[in-house]
Image (cartoon, rainbow, N blue to C red; front, side):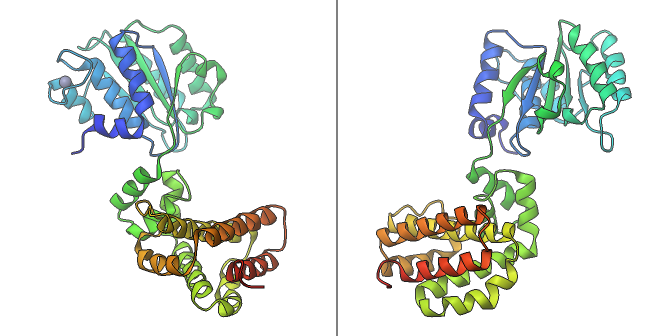
Length: 333
Ligand SMILES: [Zn+2]
């Protein structure tokens, strides 16, 4: 099993520092709001914090080995409650049940802790019950409200919490999480550069359409650099049939942009973080035939195309113009 503390240090160093700080200074708030994208470690952090508060050993870092730590890890601690949406929402009776549990004297620990996952999914009456609970906190209670959409929560609840913003997943962590889910490295590397939302990344990774998109863009790139005069044919053959609407062409431009960025990385000797790591041989080969100046011009042309697409230029026409620019570079007039 991986070490949570090490994971959090990499994933959310600022959040971890703030938690340590409040533990050291013994200024633990009654309620925290963890706001961040899926997969950014909110639940992991809540459990880590709970262990830090209830661990039987001295100090701020949980031992992961005492009775309390082990029971929290296995979800069996009588003073740590987790509320998840029941179906689509968190209902009033779930909050009422929690309050009843908490009104019993502390079962055994020094603190009672509750974690509400997807707190934005509370119904209005659930949120109002919780609000009353937050307004009169028992001195030994700590709440963790977890959300991906804090803008959907009652401002009166937010104002009673200490807000901790979780930073978006860095591409390297996202890539790792995707490969752990069984996604192949070429797809994981590429998808992790397109989004930092794990749910969206997983959805893209599993789409046959996306895998096909990647192949078509790679093919276009290869033709552009090897037989530039055939690129327009390639465009009409596969590209236009696959990338039909504005949104799809926009993704194609992003894929192309990442490919030329990879080319630039290879030309400047920074090959560690490629979006297309399995294409290193092709990239090296084309790097020899091109120059940094030319690649920079090509990147500029792609960015220009993205702007024109946003301004609603016809996608097919725009791609034709782009291919002309990409195949020529400066030498082709
Ligand atoms: Zn412990």
